[in-house]
Structure formats: C-alpha cells, structure tokens
Length: 612
Image 1 (cartoon, rainbow, N blue to C red):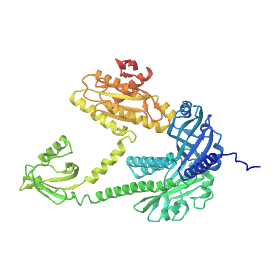
Image 2 (cartoon, one colour; image 1 turned 90 degrees about the vertical axis):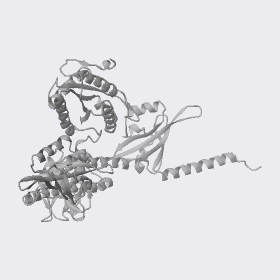
Image 3 (cartoon, rainbow, N blue to C red; image 1 turned 60 degrees about the horizontal axis):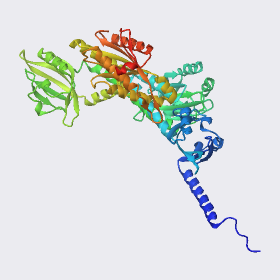
Image 4 (tube, one colour; image 1 turned 180 degrees about the horizontal axis):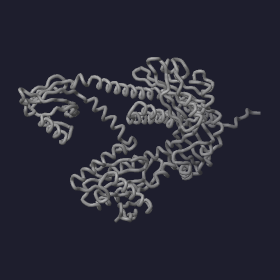
C-alpha cells in the first residue's frame, strides 16, 4: 500500500497554525491591556470574556457572566437599560457608555463600555463584540474632588470654628455614606483629645454612642483617635468591634459599628484634633479616601488655625487699641487743600502723587459716593479711620490700601492732614476669594440665593431712585425630576448647567440671573420702559428652555413656568416682588406649564402663545 495521505492539506495546516498564533497574540494583548474584550450572541448573552481586568479580576464573576445579559447581571447603565436595549435592537454601535455595579462593601465599580454589531457574510446578525475599561479610580477621584470642593464652600460660609467642624462632619458623612462623625479637639495644655462636636444620621444607637463619647478623653496612642494624634497617619478599620485600635471596642460593638476611619485635622504639620467616622457597613479600606483624608484634614486644620488667629487678633486689637490708634506701612501728609505733600515708606511711595488730591488719582474703588464721603469728612476737618481704596497698577492688576488720618493745626489754623496706611491687597484678594466661594452657585456659576437677595434689593433701590421700572421673573423647570430619575444626577447637573447658560444668554449682560436652589432660577430685568417688554423676554426664555438638551448618549427635554412681578406695580420692595413673582409662577404652572403669568392678571400665557 502506498503512504496514507493527510486529510488536511498543507494550506489548511498553515491556516490553523496562523489562527492559533493569532489567538495567542490576542490573549497576550488582552492580558497586558487595561481594557478587556467581550462577545455576545444574538440574544445579547455573553459568549466570550477575555482580559486581565474583566469582571474586576474576579474569576467567579467572570464565569457567572457567561450566558447572561448585562441587564440581568446587576449592572446599571447611564440613561437606563430601556434606552440601551433600543440601541441594540437597532443594531447600532455604542461608545464609552458609562455602566456601574454595586459591590458588597458598599462601594461601586464603574465601567466604560464600547461595542459594535457583528454580521455574517450574508448579512445575518450574529451578535455584538466590544471592549470595556474599568474607570472606578477616575470616578472615585471625581467624587472625592467634589467632596473637597463641597468642604471648601462649607468652611467659607462658616462663621465660627464650631460651625465649620459641624459642616465638615456632615458633608463627609452624607457624601461618603458614614453613619456618624465625631471631632475630638486637642487640649494642648494637657495633651489630651476631648469631644468637641458630632454629626450623625438619626438613629438611637448612634445617639447613645455620641452621648457616651462626650465624656471621653484620649491621650497619644489611646484608641484610633489617640493613635492618629500620635502618628499623624490616617487609620482605617473594617472590624470596629474587635480592633484594639478602635476608640472603645465595646462601645462600637454595642452600637453595631463595623467600619471606621480616623484622620487628623492639621495645619503646617501641627495636629489640632482628630476626626473619627463610623459605619454600620463592613467597608474594605479605600486607598483614595485615605489619601483624600490628608487634604480634607488639612482644609479643616487651616480653617481652625485661621479662626484661632482671627480670635487672637481680635483679642490683641482690643488689648492694644488704647495704646495705638493708627499703625501701618507708610506715612502721609496733605496741605490745607488736601494735596499730598509727603508720602514716605511702604509700597505706596510714588513721587507722581505729590501735589495731587486722593480723589483725583485713578482708582477702582470706592465708587463716586465713597470718595464724596471722604471729601465731606476732610472738608469738615474731622479725623477718619480705615478708609479703603484700590488703585490700578501698570501690570493691569490693582493694589488695595487702607488709611487713617487726623487734621493738623498750626496755632489754631488748619494746615492739612497727616496719617498712616498700609497695603491690604492680599487681605482684599483673600476676602474676594472667600466671597466668591460663598456667594456663587458652584454648579452653574450664577449668583446663589445669598448674593442674589442683596443685589435684588439694590436693583429695586436704583429703580426707585430713578423713577424707573423693573421686572422680577421667577423661573421653575417643569419635569426636571423626571430627567434626574431617568438619567441620573450627573445628567441632571449637565442639564442645569445648560439651562443656566440659556438663561444668561437670553437676557442682557447687565441683568441679574441667579439660581435659588434645585431647579428654581430668578432673573431681574432693570430699566424697563413697559411691562410688555418683560413678557417678551419671558416668551424668549420659554422658547429657549423647551429646546432639547443634548447629554451625549441621549437628548432630554423639559419646559419651564415663569411668574412675573413688576416694580412698582406689584410691590415696592424686593421681598414683596419675589413673593408675588413666586405666586405668579405657580399660577402659570397650574395653567398647564410651559407658560408665564403676570402677577394679578388672572391669566397665563400658554406655550402656544410663544409664536405670537
């Protein structure tokens, strides 16, 4: 018999070998990459998952996912599964869709997934394939950055140390899901930590824990708080009832706490106190939160140090006020008609100032009325203290100063003024920064309620003084809750940012626009010739707000209801106008939404009237 011929030709063998080599290269690449590869059948069930980080590196989860659809596996998707399934049914590709899965320790794993449909040579649909990427670290970084910004705003609004500590405890607990936060301040004289403040979610067990904590003191090395005080390092425990480092293990056990984190409030390596947060949930250590705790502790520590410095400064000023009336960086004198004759020492020294009066020099503050007030004082030969003003400088910036002065006499004849002053530029800039944090809405950049009310009152006063008119527009979105519920809070935030932009562009640059909170906005239109102009603006805004907003993977749409009150027709002060605009807005909303109503008119203009 002759030799048996192989049933597979040489070409087929080479093709098979090439296929195996290709598969080996593919697996090697997926094992090295931070992305992973997936395939699904025509019913969108997983048939293949390849990659080092697939299923978070959990082989059991990877095994369970084979044969499952994403929406049956506990995974969530931005925009909801219904919209995503419609995309799949249409056989469309998708890119970087955000998905997330809750984990057993209370944390969340976030993914970005892309995919494309697969078709056979004859055009038959075979399923989907694509890649995924774990972005948990990125999302966690975003969450902690938002927390840091939230704490900066909270501290900027706090009037004293106690308010600031309470704000930090509450914001940290609510943002990170902790049940209780306690702050122990360091008694430097005795070297002991003593209870100073606490915040907790309503729970009788937590309340008992806090009450018991009030009488406790801890030295360096005692419990979690004492060990943080001793080392300065943040400490995490996942077993509060049995960890010997915990504040009081028996008390933690009685309260039901399982997880805890403690870190120092410090300023320039000086530890001022320790924050301890507790949770009923078993929580694995969160390296990013431990890292962020240093920044948060530093924010609180710097705030506390600043408040201490301010308190010490007030005490010092009160103690020495009787010994020194004026202190500063430079000395100045003027003649009998208020022209500078001397200006010595300090940064303000400038020969060009000699021979000129203060109010004749270029300035950026105060306004004309402020300078007129100073002129009236010096014309009356009265002393003055702490007059602030700002001067432009050559580089385009500004310097700010505060001066005090007293009249000079020669044998009873007035001969001019002399005084002292100092450069307060850094203080003014810091003050402006704090005001910006405290009075601007951090999401939209519009004025917030705190800054809006005084500005509204000033606008009313200007209109009263000029005998003019203004309009107050109370704007409330229709259907915003549905946007939040359907697409998530991140999408809701992007929607509000776009609403704010359209409102800002829909009015004049000089008009006031504010976000009062949630989905409520307010606009003030000054210098109106007639109320009909306000109605025209309302029509324009309604038309803008009803246009769909593109949120990337989806477009959403909501309308608005607007209430209008006119000064002086509907009120002669800001509070009354605001209340009447609010009432008109509810009248518009009850009339079918996407409308506006003028206070007291008894009628609203529906959306159909936008084309009028």
